[in-house]
Amino acid sequence: MISKKNLNYLLFLFSLLGYLFLYYGIERSEFFKLILGVIILGFIYFYWLKIKSLTVKKIVVFAVIFRAFLLFDIPNFSDDYNRFLWDGIVMTEGVNPYENTPIQILENKEINNENLDVLYKNLNSKGYYTVYPPLNQFFFSASILLSGNNWRLGLFFMKLIILLFDIGLIYILILMLRKLKLKENLAQIYALNPLVIIELTGNVHFEGVMLFFLFSGIYFIMKNKIIVASIFIGLAVSVKIVPLLILPLFLPLLGFKKSLKLYVGIGVTTVLLVLPFISQAVIDNFSQSLNLYFQSFEFNASFYYLFKSISYFFLGYKTSFIGIITPIVVLLTALWFTFLLYKKKGVKEFDLALFAKYASGLLFVFYLLASTIHPWYVINLVVFSVFIFNKAYLLWSLLIFLSYFAYSNFVVELATNSDFHSYNWYYYLVFFEYAIVIIFFIFESRNKNKTLKTIT
Image (cartoon, rainbow, N blue to C red; front, side, top):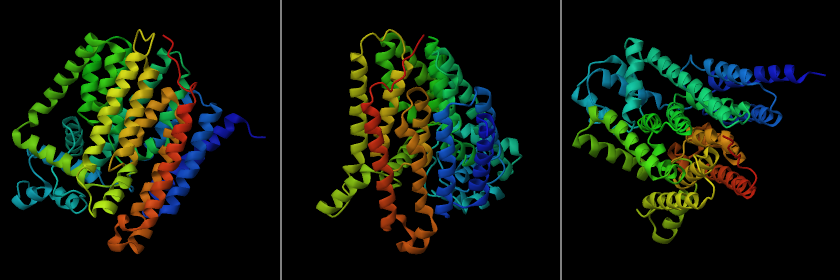
């Protein structure tokens, strides 16, 4: 009979082949092959979580190898990297990407760079100003500078940057688990998650970079180094603005004085990074792009689709009120969660498990109401699960791959104008995805003993 040690090595090999198959062997249009690969990787992932047989060393080694093998090709599930490279080239040419859309840059012939002609063909938002925060722009530019103005090599360096920060995040998670006197191999919840591996290093998304800064900040909060923490969280906001949603939750856990120091530090750090780009035109353009993103883009939504259908049924059109439901509900939820944290008795110092529970819950509410939920968004829930082990979030990290049906051959061949929104099977799969996730979330929420307690 095969030993547990040898079985883990065999599963590691199967997982590696699975990642190579998904990344190098298929296109995102091959839906059934994609889902088959995810199912195999998902079973192995949950087996490792169930058995808890991997040492920290093996977790780190396996995690690094899986990611490293995805460094050497163009992403096959997402084309966002084209805009990242575009912004990087534009920045290195001395043009502000917040003030010029790709269409304007080519029409005005402000830049003479052959790479732009190649990237322009595959850009998905040519008429939009960039929505990526300033620190992201630094990483985009650094990748281009390191590549010697070669976009393919620039893509490699971009992946390498993401990989290094992702490894750094795994190390931070291990340090946090060690400080809490929890089992360090809980880090595998994030480190070996298929969605994390595929969408970060593989598909070049910067959630891992943002999470490195965010959790570094939280780690320094645990060490009562508030100023240092504020700088790291400010850097996180300057990569992705998502952390802004959960900032109110620090107030009841840290108290007024520490929270004020934290918020001021985050604000100063963010402003300093924004200053090189700032102008009234930049503010207007950035706001316009964000507004268009939330109002016009629709992908893999749940309640948003429901509200939209109700609006069409009763009014015959999509009311603009739908666009303000999400911010109102999220704001009220944030205030409610903050109030609940204030009511908690005996919280004398920062409780990470408590913060993780409410922060992930707030993000979950936001994602349920948002008009666009790309797969890599769910990574923000996966990382919090290291400290609360919410099975609903981990299950969603696999079910979210069903959203790639929108790009499948079925849609291209059968949907009107190849528009996934005109194809009923797309909505059936979205309903299945969210129904399962919500059911599991309710089940998890009723299990009062699920939250891990901090021991400091």
